[in-house]
Amino acid sequence: MSILFSLVIAYSFFIVGKFLRSNLMMKQMESLNGRHEGIKSMSVGNLCDFSGNSKLCICVVTWNMNGQVSYQDLVELFGRSRNFDLLVVGLQEVPRRNISRLLQAAVVDTLTLLGEAVMQSLQLYVFGPQNSGLFIRELTVDKHSFGGFGGLIRRNKGAAAIRINYKGIVMVFISCHLSAHAHNVEERNWQCQHLTHNLFSKNPNPYARPAHITVWLGDLNFRIEGIDTYPARNLIDKDLHRLLTSKDQLLQEAAKGRIFSGFCEGTLTFKPTYKYNIGSSNYDTSYKVRVPSWTDRILFRMEDSDKISAILHSYNSVDNIYSSDHKPVKAHICLRPNERPNAVL
Image (tube, rainbow, N blue to C red):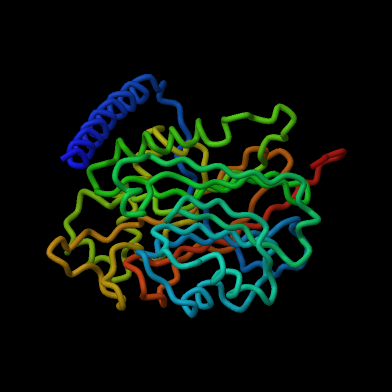
């Protein structure tokens, strides 16, 4: 009885906390003055030739693994072409087996682990070339969980983050898993704001340089709404899924100035990444027949665009991996110093 009573009390606090956060979010939204940038949609440039014109090229990968994975999936995910300096991997719903070891085995021929932030099933890794640790001037990690019952079943909601100064470029990577279900938009908005204000806020280094770029990746769980599942699937089948972007909650909330103001994202040319029947390329045929949605995203914002600019060379899903109900998403971002006299990184 004591265990049941404790669970009831914990759930009550969870519901009350959710209600209070929702009210706080509403008050914050009411205080906005209407000036906001939203998310800037970027077209993808030519493939990166890795010729040295850029100071730093980053491959960013996010994947909700749904509690299962195979080594071959990871090899397929990362590919054999390694035309980048850093590989950033954000994983959600990671199985209990040692994923870090599998990841390193999949890239061991060219890359080595530089840093990791692990919070049970929510994990973030940064890999670089052999001996690239010599170029690291700072590497700190942080993580934040939103509690509830996710931890009991090892499927956390929250974020794991890494801040790294590599070759003089300061980068912040935030791998997150936000609240599920289409109706929890305000909850996800609050979580985004809470993570923005709280990550790396404890014991800040007054001498640390500000970030040049911040990258959010993960299962943000924003859905497509305002259209039924079968009309949505019909558009996807006809390769007209771009028409669904106007119904994407993430873009809608950003356009209202509630989250991710000033961030960039590649144009959503790939199909919605959730929810698939495991083992196939067919969307959900369970009794819920969920509306396909772009739950898995990669966003970035240049914090010091006067000194460094970013070029997005690719943004797509990896559709030939079938072990999860999510498709992984990859982006290739190259950073280049702006040509200005006396510019110092």
